[in-house]
Image (cartoon, rainbow, N blue to C red; front, side):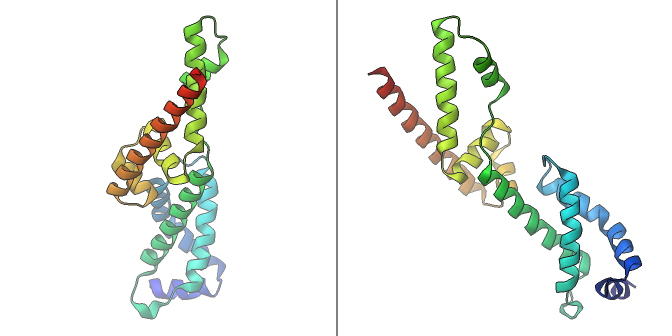
Length: 185
């Protein structure tokens, strides 16, 4: 039954395509929620998933013995992970609400002014980190994800995430300390 529907959908039969979209909707929703649970525009991802489905139909070979729904889910997973990596690579670290509060308030006292300068300097330093380090630090400190959650989200091993976080913290300390030394002169 499934192979007949796939064959009809492959020939662009509108009814078969519509039925396939309905049948695969739970897989699509679950895959999007699993890989990009905090996506800013999930509706856009559902639209992209429909395009991935059409591409998967073209590339699907039933003679290989893989069920179509597994083939589609893998294809969609790879697309979502690539999209997530691209968005993390291009994103800058947003100011946290605490930092925004510091920036918005007028620095009445010298302590407040020093804290404001430190928050702005730290924000700039984090944005200057290499892409992977910035992604790990952002997800760990600003999104409050565990190292294993970051590992799953970025598709890299736990050990790589731990090493990247450690390396990023060394970078942050070294750059921050050097800036503090320069500023104090």
